[in-house]
Amino acid sequence: MTCRRARLPTRRLCTIEGLTWQGQRWHVTTGRDEAGTVKEVFAAPPKVGSDIAGIVNDGCILASMLM
Image 1 (cartoon, rainbow, N blue to C red):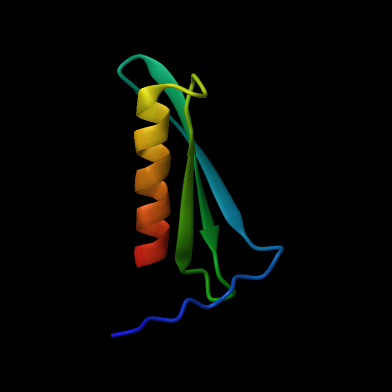
Image 2 (cartoon, rainbow, N blue to C red):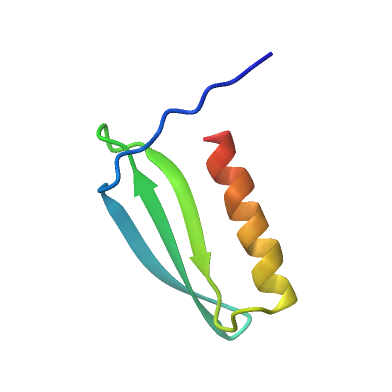
């Protein structure tokens, strides 16, 4: 089974939400296609380069690929 991903436009609607998890402030960005459907997700950790940042970034990539 093969799956083709549609390339998103260079400029697209996005939403940035702030959240607090275990006392740390995170920013989560969702990117949308022309129909307004969420097609990608990114997370900005409070401390870049930490182990949890790498795990969350990998999870965001996986979630984006599955959308």
